Image (tube, rainbow, N blue to C red; front, side):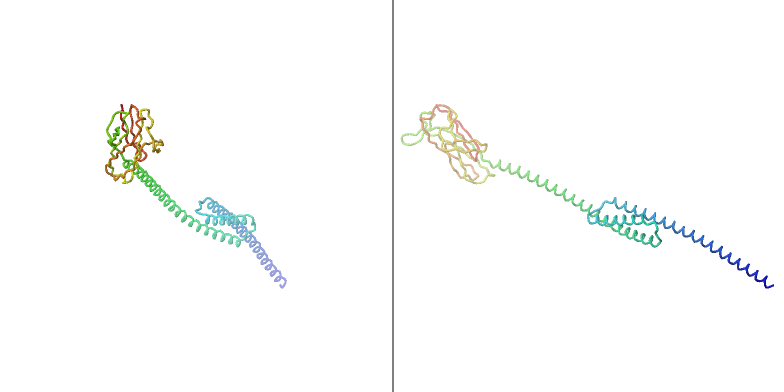
Length: 295
């Protein structure tokens, strides 16, 4: 009876041990399966994280950066992505703790990059506004410059017209020959052999645009051969021609009609028959001429 009880107890122990063994084997299989799932999950997360890092890096590499200061910060962020990609690619035995650490680094870098991107967009908009303002200012300056140029041209044209309008002119140019009597009085003559004096006269016309000033009046007398009858000096007129004059008179011009008369003594022995020309010069210009026929 006691022997049967012992056998029965042994069977129960064996059954219990068998159940425990089966449970242990089952747990080990389940644990291994779960571990494999965790490893696969970590591997997938790691691959996805690397892809995210590469994508972020590529996006920021193509951005147009507004200034050098931001460019430096962007380069640092891209370098951070490169560093994380290199570390993750080399790390084969990564744990969940490691993965969490890299994810935190990724999100920190991404947050910083997004902040830089917003700042970059703000600066770009400001630059665009500045560019628009600059272009507007440039256009205004060009417009003002053109206006100033046009006004300068108009001023020069007006000054030129005023200068032309202010030029003096003469009328009633006359040249006569005169002989000197024994009593010193002068008498008109038309004969070359009795000519002692050429009397030249003209009227300087009124010009209200001109200024009151002292004028130098130069008279040139050319003989029948085209050469000066006599010379007392020379001047260079505005076209560069050198004129040898026989008489020079200074008069005060006050913007009103002014008659000028010159009596020029000549040597009658040098006066021959023919046509004589009197030329009158004012302000460096030939302003009037008249001829005289002597017999």
